[in-house]
Length: 398
Image (cartoon, rainbow, N blue to C red; front, side, top):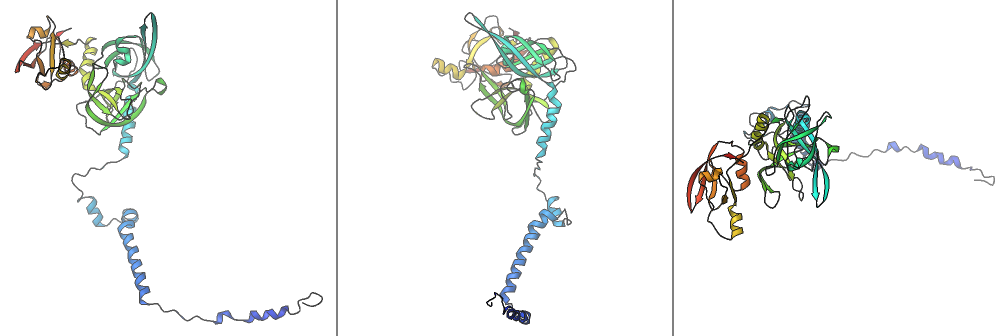
């Protein structure tokens, strides 16, 4: 740069442009044997991955034809006892069951009047029921209709109709009741067979949990257990129940428990509040003969033997003696002029069987009596003074 600020020597830097970088050629690098070995190993590994995983999973049968070896394995060489489960089957079954049966589920509202000293108090209740006959016969729980104490009963059908209901029959120990309500074009639920159940099979519950705001809610689960027993109070136990993990809440009581065919296999009755997924239903086969007779005759007449008794273990604890019988019902008192008295039953007899079926509780005995009618006979196997004898009895009404 001169005194005037000009860069007089700038053009001298242009000589760098004449330098030819391309004229320099790097000699080729020789590859050793080790390099080829590494490449071969990597290629072999990649080829194995493609042939053993990617091709069978993503290519064969989709982009490339299925090799014969895979066809043979998937067909003729399949294990004989292999069970193929399609996950979507259960979901489709629940939808089909709901569509088939939901119209036959009703809501039941009640008013029960209780007296506390001189005061009367009205309590409202909500439950569920299932239509079992087109003429308006509805099966539900006894506790849903206040165990016969309801002052008023209203039935809400699926189409919005509401009508008064009449209690035709109920039993507090079985926790079952039959209600009659007038309606038109009623959908009737199909009855199933509760003796043909397996633990693990699908179960669907429909009802009105927590009131009519959630009416005809559908929940699903499995049959968790069979022949379960739960204590409902100090003296009574409901036996032979179906256990399910399908969600059952207050208001579901009286609603149906259904199988995959949409058939009623039980009437939902209780839930253990201290645990999750512990719901119980009364097997429908217990209710079938009762419902049939109520529909036919308008009533169900219970037969009875005519004695007061209690389970052997309860009697032994209460009295403090060992009667040396493992199980059964001990006769505490025989009612005069009853079927038991006419058959010759005595106090301290232990009833262990009726027509070949073991008896372990008063509930199980009473449940068996629903299969008999007035005038029917049965054979009781009893233990008397350490000896086993058979006693024939003819049933009478209360």
